[in-house]
Length: 361
Image 1 (cartoon, rainbow, N blue to C red):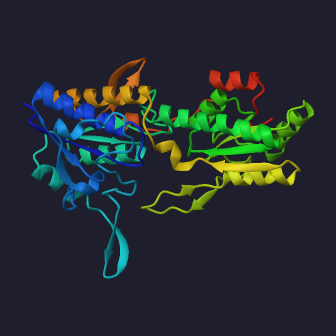
Image 2: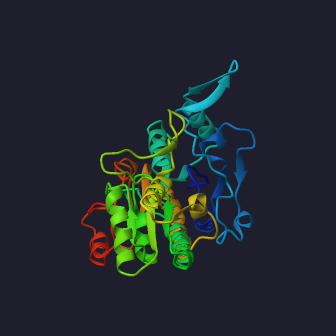
Image 3: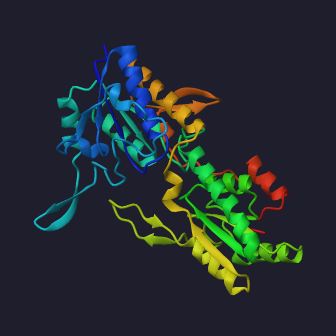
């Protein structure tokens, strides 16, 4: 019988994390009479003091509408490359064996790991060290190849769409080109879907390198047609043809490179061509706030399915959405590559047919 499981949330936060925790706890307690331990701040909780907290029915009351995660998270919490300070100097060390010992000491029958591509890769490697792992996919970018949809994406999309709606009114009032930079490191799902839903004139995504001249041509075209404003949705990972992505901070073995600046680069170019332009970077607003109904339901389904999978003793798997049903897939296969927008996607085709520019004409 499954007597004790653990759950942790790693990587960037996303709306719906608390719904996963709630569903996992309620399913474990009510269906399996199983104890649940919450691991604070990702994998760090196994080696930090006060890193383990019991999660009962009372602890998960009222969690559905809450954004963030009650367990905290860490997007630099890789136990295979943890940053520590020794003799006044910072260095990276492999503490994965300590993590494994901590898990064994707690006598967990399973560990549910809720995270994105990076966190799930770590989870798979810990499974190879003997940890009974079940993965739950989370990312607002929707870029995990093993599932059709990740929770967090729908909320981020609706926040982005609302921002576009609000920019429309001020853009029209002041006769400006308004550039909205959205999240999307290597996958442009947020910008594509929000741009389509919000009726933008230009959508720039990582999958389609753009030409500055083509972007300005679209703005000029609208002026000639009598429209005195333009709205542009730009993924933070978008890049010009023959150019590179723009970073605000370089990365290393611990820190992921931080994207940022492409929105301003696009805005400055449009401005230089004689069109008054303003740039808005939506940033972490896309991660915050109450999750949508879709994300609450999907996250709850994932959390419950992960517990049921653990109860069967089937590990190194990730729950996923496939053809509307929650199934599972191996962690290795689920994280084999980064899912991206396909250029023959009907949404791309529809957008082009409706006159939306991707800056590649």
